[in-house]
Amino acid sequence: MRFAFLFLDAVDSSLGRLDYASLSQQALMEMVIEGIANKEKICGDVDEPKDIEEWEGVEIEDGEVVEIRWGDSGITGSLCVEWLPSSVKEVDAFDNGLTGTLDLASLPTSMERLDLALNAFTGSICLERLPEIMVYLNVSENACCGSLKLDSLPDTLAFFYADENKFSGSVDLTRLPAVLENLLLSINQLTGSVVLTQLPDGLNSLYLGGNQFNGSLDLTQLPPGLSQLLLNHNAFSGTVDLSHLPRRLKGLFLSSNKLSGEVFISDELFDIVDVRNTKIIKRRIE
Image 1: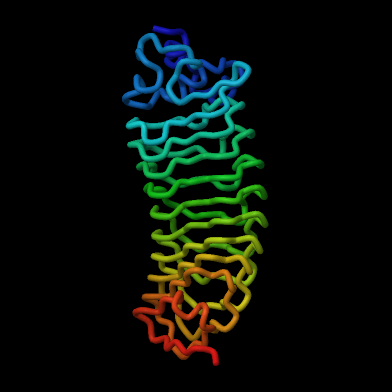
Image 2: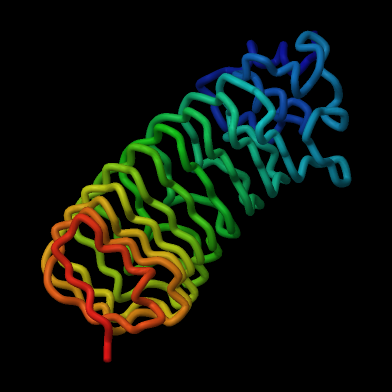
């Protein structure tokens, strides 16, 4: 058996991350996949794993791991992202059978992209200590829970996907990263009111449908480039002003809420506003 796998049994758990800096890229990568049940799909023989240069989906530059592409590869078990080498910039491990919790607070500081969608991860995720240069984070369609501290997202984050999980609590949409383009939080257990008057100017898609949000809606100061806004299947109530919608809007979903009253909408946007299962009456602006 190779040294790195033998080393796993010798790691002093009391030292924790203190051992990280002393490990080679090979040893770190073997620790990343230690919990994967069928790791042979990645490293070959489990007892005599190949050098990481020969691993499936691993890109090496100047002897260091920079990208990991294990998306839709059929791997199962747990993924220890806290042991990723400090050189790693991108990890794609979506659409597998991965389980366990995610230690996002210990990701490499060089990481820009992490895609773990379509797995079975559980537990809470820490957004307060993400890499400062991260651009893309996708944990959609897992079973993660706990709160989402959106006001702690790194300033560089442009894409955050957390839909179809079990996240709960309220969310602060007033201090999102200025560069944020897509924010998907649909089909969770999120609650409370939402403020939509201080969204980033460049926001393109905001999905909040399928939660337990409530209170009134102010849609008079939406970002000018907003294309998709999903607010359906919540408990929003009261009347809503739709006379100042962004001209680039392609879809506004208000269905299955407690909204009511007459709304006046321009001709070009009239058909893209969905008010089914509400008491809203749509009128065209003359």
